[in-house]
Length: 239
Image (tube, rainbow, N blue to C red; front, side, top):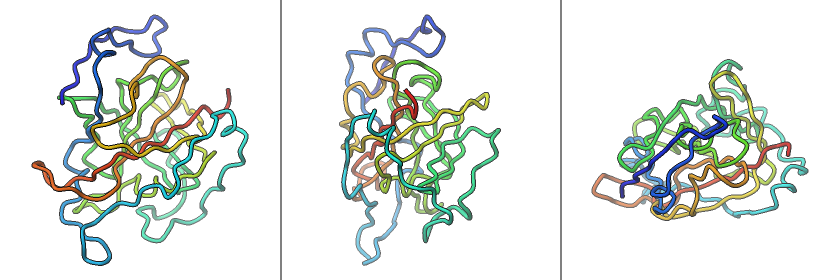
C-alpha cells in the first residue's frame, strides 16, 4: 500500500505534525531495500529458514521498566554474532546500542518512500526514521528499523533483538552527538501489514520503537521475505 502524508513543522521545532489525511490512514511498515529478504537461506535441518521470534512477549508498565535492574551487558559476543567484540562505537558516531545483546549499530537517516520505510541495504546499519518523532521531542514515537540477516551479507545488526529482556538499556546517539537512554518495556509480533495503530504518532507518550523482521520465510512476488515484524517498545530511562 502507499502512505500519503501531509506535514508541517511542529511549533516547538522538535518534530513534524502530520495533517488530518495522514492521521486517518492505516499505516503498514514495509521494510524495503532488498536486504530484508533472506534469499535462499536454509534452516539447520535443511528446510526453510526462519528467524526466531521472542519466546515470551512481555508488556510491563513503563515506570516499572525504569526501576528494573535490567540484564547486564555482555562482555563477549554470542556465538555466531557479527560483532567482533562487545565495545561501543566512537561516541561521535550516530548509533543505537543495546549492551545486554552486544548490539552496537551505526545509525543513518531513512524515510518512507513509495509507501515503504527504506532502510539501508547494508545489514550492519540501522535506520532512524526522520519522519518519526525527533530524539529530543517531548512527545511521540521514535522509530528505528534494522535487518536480521541477508543471504549474501549474513547476520544483520538486529539478529539477536528477539532476545531482549524487560528493563534492557537502549541508548541512541543521534546527529549532533546527543545521546538518549531508554528501557525496554514491551515486545510485540505483528504481521507485516498490520502494525499497531498510531505507530508513527508524534503525539502521546515519548517512546522508542525498534523494528525488525522475524518468523518463517514466505515466498512473495518480490522474493522470499519474513512473515512478521518484531517490535520492541522502550520508555525514557528517566521520566
